Length: 602
Image (cartoon, rainbow, N blue to C red; front, side, top):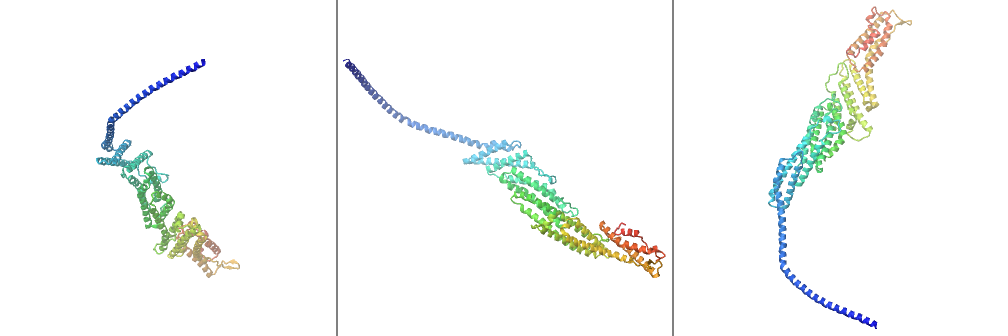
């Protein structure tokens, strides 16, 4: 029972709770309906508000855009106007000119003008055209002033040199580093400005005008010296002293130094043309100097050939270095090669002209020496040959015309040339010997010349060049003349041939009249012929001490033994009541007379 009451109570509670919920739901529905009504009312009002505000909003946006456009336009106009006024503002700085010690303000002013010009060119405003003309004119003035500053700076740091001071130095000094840096910066700015504003600055011309003039003036004095120096005779020229050699050596150094300077100053695309234009005048001066030297040598080729050979030898050693530096110009090498060919052509021609000159000397009326000494032709030719051998490699190259051959072939060419020279000399002096009328003077003349020829050959490289066969040929010619000379003394000695008058194995003391007369005649003839030979040959000359001693020794060996024996045999005989009349000389006095032969001072 109790359990039922409990269940009834729970049911009543649930019913009560359900009724409460239903009541709450009804109130919520009522509240929802009220809220929905309010929201619908708001929607209606918002639609009405939007319809009223939307036209105003659109008008406000238009006004904002107009304001923005006005602001931007104002800014642009103000920006343009400042460029319109810039020419006036910067004119004072630019017209005042750059300060060499501080170029930055000037550079900044020019940059401002360049920026303004660039900006205005983009605007395409008709009103900007006049301003642009002013700006361009201002830039031209500025660039002209910077060009002038560069010109003056380069000129101030370009001083003529004396080439003789740099022969032994490895380099020629250039511009001081601080000045070089200043010029380099200026050069870079000018180069950039040229491309920025499409205006030619002509840096290359400024540089080449100044530096080419410096090179030409530096070498002007030595160029003039070459012309006067080339007139020196072959006898006075000393190897290595030609001013042309000095000019070549120092010019190469100067050109190498110049290329370094061009690299440091000029923009890369300007280097080759600038260097070419800079060195062209000095190279032309060098070529003309070489041509002047050749002209002088041609006027007296045998006097000037040694200087020319010296120049060729030096030129040949310097040629590779010369060509390397000229290759950097992109041209100029042909003129140098032409000069080189001219040098060689003239030198090669001199060899044949030398031979021809020797041949022609036979026809020239040259007075012979009265004493039969070495002829001027022989000494000149041999001295010429000796001096040619001072330039042996060059002479070989010229005689073979630069053809690459083996050493034996080269030696054969040189041997043939010098053999031809000596053969022509020998033929010439043999012909000249015929001009002597005094007995045996022509023989003495040939002895002197042959001996001198042999002596020179043996004391120089000629001996190895000619070879033993040719030397032997000249020795035989010399021996032949010495033997021919001995003949004049043999005729004297013939009077001393033994005519012994003996009786029973003992020299006869009592001679018949005819025997005494024969002995007297022999003494008389000997004395007369000896005195005549002495009188004549005392005035003959054998200037070489070695040859003179050799010839006198041969005379003594031939005469003295025969004379001594002859005198000793007949001194004790009664061939004359006055023996001293016939026996004029004893051995010592006769020897003294012989010693005085060929000595014009005795």
